[in-house]
Length: 438
Image (cartoon, rainbow, N blue to C red; front, side, top):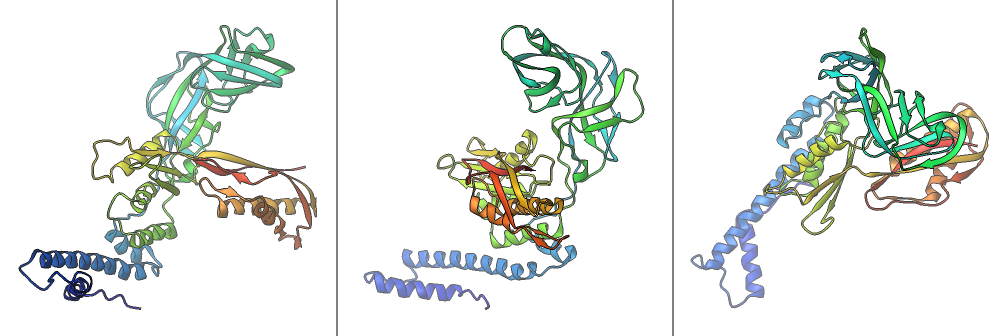
């Protein structure tokens, strides 16, 4: 059905009729009166809004039918929605070796056939940090440092100053689990905790600042990934390892359908002021950002809180640099830019959901794979910020598992965990953890 907005004259006539009906003492036909001038001004404003709506409705019907990038480009230009192009990744890694060894700027490292370049000259040196807590229950020792450490998994670390002698020594079986935590393995089981004294963790290392030399998601590396040095540097080990935050930011060229969806969104949500549509468009206009949630009047009136994720990164939660970029994009939308204290941009808090399933019938590897795929699909389809995931819906998704190789439907199973609905609090996002079978 065609959209035919009324003319200015028709709008004025309707206004006159309405005033005559409800405000009988006023004369809306006197062209010298203030009331008539007000009617004309209101009619013109209404006409402008109608024409803008018509301008948006007409192209929108064409945008939804676009099949190629060339066809979509003119409409994207109208709404200033450029296609997100592939980006490089960057991040930090750690290399160990002999103190005094220099790693020159421009040194290349390789991982997964991708080349990464060191952006500054650094020197391997002994670095120490205080330990606030060290504990063990078995052979695994967990260390919490007094501040953020510069360590990476698989880097030799020396622990000293502990009364529990088994804690002291140099350990290469190190796994970094957080910005201030790591674990290592000792020979014999110990149950002990220390949190006082001169507890020190030391490593002879250099922190590398790396940038990928190619583009795309393939350049992203997760915590503890290995990078081989290109060539050899005397006094440096052959491999570096990524720090806890990994190497991130690499994104592929935006898929056509994703780009088209953003263009359609702009036509369906005309941007006039600092609003939800505008904020989402700004955040998702940054390469690699995939989902965004905007909470108006949060934490109070006059403020806005924004969350976003990067589903194609090794860690979907954005780091501090990515959060800063998103906040800059949001703040830039404001008419008054004297302060950004009313704009809050965060990474969601992960609410990890682990699964343990037993008594699977038929108990085959391919059926277990089918169950895993159904759980993953359930999370793709149902997860939202601060959402509640129904246990019954989770069970239904598992029960519908079908083994394509054997042609058999899942008969029975027992879901041990989770055992209740997954309820998220403010800022939490359900994230799929491990799926184990027992």
